[in-house]
Length: 71
Image 1 (spheres, rainbow, N blue to C red):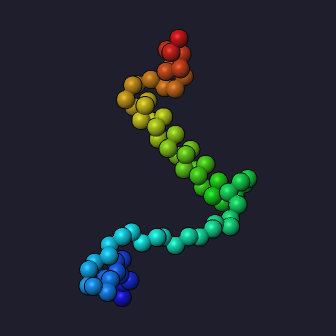
Image 2: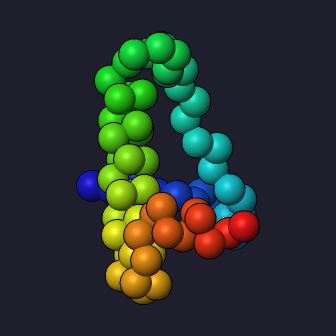
Image 3: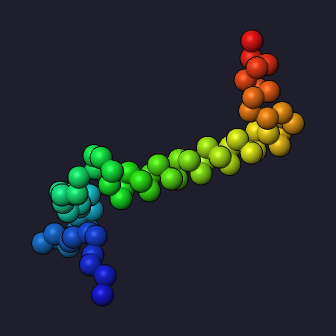
């Protein structure tokens, strides 16, 4: 059974104020060579690689040609 997200006061009126979320503390370190950092790095690398391929398909030029044409 799902908990209710509202309360009814003694007079039968709906009390629909926001319910505070439960607080928690994440004890895992997010600095250094952690599983989280490696996963994030891999995802960003995949996004960059796909963006590079899409740019090359749309412009018809490779990365080096695009960078040399910026001058």
